[in-house]
Each structure stands twice: as C-alpha cells, then as structure tokens.
Amino acid sequence: MTSETRIEGKTAVLVLGCPQVPVQTGIALYLMSILRKKGVRAVVAGNRAARLLVEVSDPERHYVGEVMDIDRYIDEIADKKRSFDYHFIFIHNDAGVSYAATVQSLTGTTVIALIYGEHFQEMADLIEFPCEKIAAKAVHNPMPLKNKLDEVLPWVVSNL
Amino acid sequence: MGCIESMKYEIILRDASFRECRDYIRANCSEYVDVIPGFKIFDKHIIGVPPISIGFEGDLIIFPFTKPCYGTFLMKIEDHDEAVRIRQSALKLKK
Image (cartoon, rainbow over all chains, first blue to last red; front, side, top):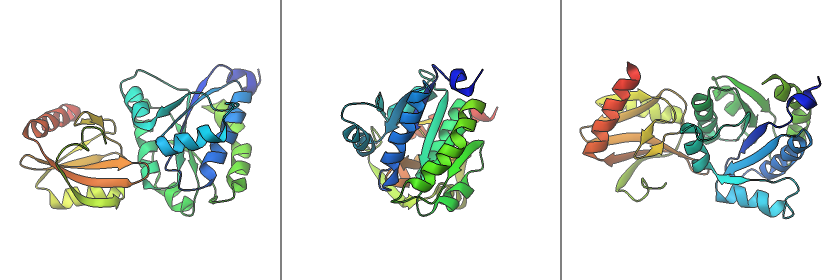
C-alpha cells in the first residue's frame, strides 16, 4: 500500500498565525493543493485577516474548503466536538508556539509545526513538546519553506 | 476577546512571551496555580505552553491571554466567583 492511498479520506487543519509574514498565505494555499491531491480534506483556522487573505487568493475555491475562526477551532477540539488527523500550525512568533502547545496538549497528537520568518530558529528552539518541525528562514520568498515541505511532507503524513 | 474583552481589565504586560508571563506570575503573585492549555477561564480556553501559571491577589486573577496578532497579554481582572472556581478546578487537576 502506498502512502498516497493510506491517507485518502483523512482530514487536516491549517492553523494560521497573524498574516504579517508574507509567505504564510502562499504556503497555506500550496499545502492545501498538496493535501487535496492526496485526498486529504483541509480546513483553515485563523483570525479574520488570515482567513480573508486565503479566501481572496482563491476566489474559485480550487484549494480552499471550509474556513473557521481560530477561537472556534480551539473550542471545538477542547470540547471534543471535532477532531482532525493532521494539525499544521503556522508559527512565526511566540503566540504561534503557544497555539501549537495548546493543540498538542488538547489532542494528544503530534502536531506539525511550519516555522518561518526572520526568527524561525529562535521559535523552533522554544518548542519542547512532541512536534514535527518543518522550519526555514522564509519571510518574503516562500521557496525555502516550500522546498522543506516538499522534502519532508510525504514522510510526515505517512508516519503520523 | 469575547467576554473577557468586555470586562474591566488591566494589562500588566503586553506583547510578552509565555515564559515572561509565567515568570512574572511566579515572582510577583502571593498565590498561583498551574493549569494545562485549554483550561477554562472566564469561559475561554486558555492558550499557552504548559505549565500555564495563573496568579491571585485575593479576588484579583492574573493570567496570560494570547491572540495570534498581538502575542500574549498578562491581564488582571477582579472576580470573586471566578477566582474561587479557578482555585477549586486547579486543585481537582492536581489530584
């Protein structure tokens, strides 16, 4: 059985941070396109600005499916009303690390941290809980993070 | 911030890190409890890296509040009933 068939029918959530770092929206859309090809249904959780950036960037909804408010996402996983197979947490600041730790603690699953921005190494070093880290210094140019994602995503989704 | 935003609050630290908030509470509050992420405070699930410290000065509750764009605020709100509830719930968590 290939990794492609194993993950068919699974669900993922992309937890977006503050959209102040330009690469976030592009990487989110790219990740959603990969997940869609693998048969994974992806949901986006974020604040209003982060959600609108994603929605405006994909008006025909080729990649974007359901979007939800980040507070509602936390409430629903905390109250066990909803669960996902993969939690991708976008991290470029301390708040992102706090959200990743919260999701890990609430779900007991290994979250996947996408760490980027000027201080990506500092943020990666703050993470001491079980987590798959995909980290690159990407601020305006998404390619370093995209390349890292291409390199490790097949392994990550087939092993979690 | 939901209901917390509409309450009378004071901000002690703004754009702080989770560690700064924890260190402040442990160094400056006469009483504190440690809780896990998702613990409810003012009906909101608390966000943070465990252990998350919540401090007390009588009925004053000192706690971190995280938003994606604004980082973590260390806030202070006075509420007798909520202070009692948090102390009791945190005790149950310990057992």
